[in-house]
Amino acid sequence: RFAMGKIIIWYTLKSVTDSRGLMEDPEFCGRHGERTIFEIENAQGKVMSIQDFSQFVHERELLVRPLVQFRVVAKTKQCDKRNPRSGDPFATADIVRLKMLTDVVIRAPDHAAALASLARDSMNASAWNDLGFYGGGE
Image (cartoon, rainbow, N blue to C red; front, side):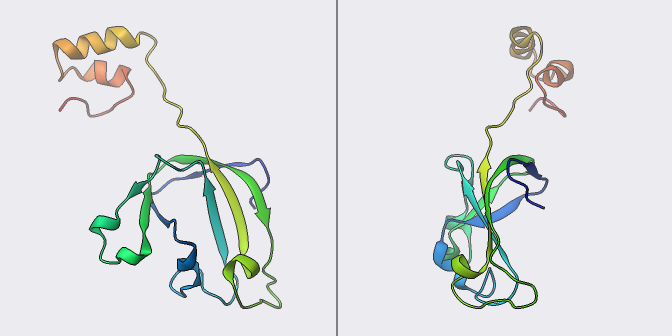
């Protein structure tokens, strides 16, 4: 399912953590049964910490915005459906390593003209559309 080199897209907002220890918690990965850990490379500066707003500060929660693209760079199959092992999640869970890709921004053919139009009239819907924004304006 997670072939090496495959590009995948998370279509919805995702909550992740940078706390390895949290994977021991049964509410997350836990120590028993079939489970998968996603390790994300290249995420620094591309995720938003909500730890200061969270009721569960110890979770060190980070948000990944929708439509982020990843490339599968490694995978380790450690779970056996017929005989699942218990223990350290990083030794017994399947692990998929993803590299977060740089966003591709689609620009208008005449980017400067669209910006100039917005400078004159910030409610100019067609200029916002030319820049790739929909709903436009303020």
